[in-house]
Amino acid sequence: MQNSTTPIATPTLKRRLICMVYELFLLTAVVMFGLLVFLLVTQKMSQSIIEHGRTVVLFLVPGAYFIYSWTDKGYTLAMKTWRIKLVKVGYASVPLKAAVVRYLLAWGWVLPALVICWRFHLTSKTEVAIALAINVALWAMTAFIYEDRQFLHDRLAGTRLILLPKPLKASKAEQAAKPAEA
Image (cartoon, rainbow, N blue to C red; front, side, top):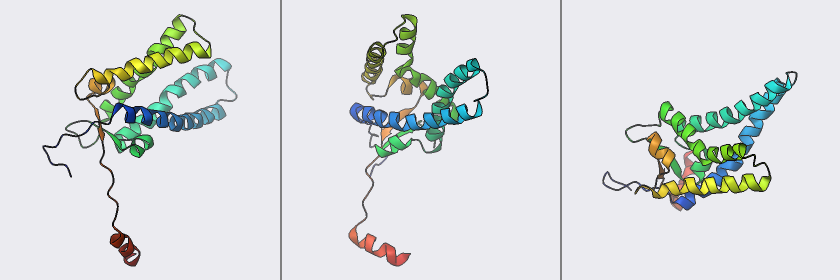
């Protein structure tokens, strides 16, 4: 149990990166559903509206998913699984403004690589993958700038990731008593 003088643990970089990989799988499903709805609604519209709309969906759907999750409980499903929570010191829950700012700043994980690929006409899967890998590695290293090991986007947004304690397992006596109570 933590008291007021016990420092709150920051999840390790490894734990956060593994959580992000899991998050990527979940986010893919969320985005695919959003794109499905969009394409069903716009199937009779012009091709240019559909192309620009897809880009908007690819930006707004993840934003809605993350911002809602962070402001509601402080974590997404992947973060809950890996016992990571987003907090803003001094607040019971993450304020909407801080969640929006964090989402926009978190594009630093991929946006610079995408801009470089666009600017230099890097279109092969290998070129894009290398650019993204370098960008992700550089952004991950921002955790080593500060002593508390928070990423740059968390530092700028005024948020932080904390490691939640392991859930306590109920004793056998408590488990045996539960069915009797119900």
